[in-house]
Length: 295
Image (tube, rainbow, N blue to C red; front, side, top):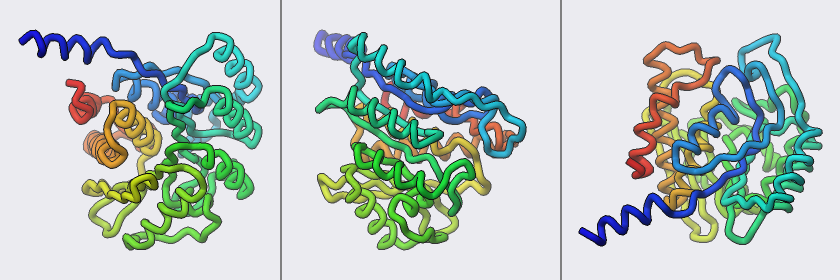
């Protein structure tokens, strides 16, 4: 009995881990920081935010949105945090609006990277075979350089194609093709790669994980929910990092992230929510905490 009590005390009093999340803020339409902050925090991890821009809504399906670039604020924030000797267990980057921000994030990595922490880069720049309109093809070269400095990258297949300078292919895919993409992406620099938007048939959708240190490739799939849903990449990346920081293996973390994201999509479809508004991940948080064995 005393050992059990001691274990519970240790579990709840161990050091709180901290993430620096570098994304934009969309006031309405759940994505980027309005997804990362609640999901990672719910997983018992302190979440520090460095906004790259503030928008009234995200850009997917909305018009006349406001946009305030925060590039000029990023370096002063970095310098202030450094003066406070703040340490991070992970650095997590998403949407970056310019080459200048790529350079500023590189400086952030150089300032706060340690031997023990994790850098996770979600190379947000493209989907469905096309680069987002605000980016030029040259932006992919800058993003490739950022990915070289990461421990984990989380591209979708379109982003993977741009990072590798290859022609985008429509699915369904073959296992051989996905395995080849994973290994080429790891050859850029990151030891771990999680590729999203993977499917071998039209009934299932999921992700593939590759750990170059083990030579291990694993897949996680759930039943596909028809339609296109905004913000799911941010939900997935936030869930993946949360699981990794809760000491799950990359393969386990990928499975958790696929289950959580798919459940949120399913709840959104069942509720008939306007897909521009993002997915109903809030209703899935209790399930997520069970996947993480926190409740």
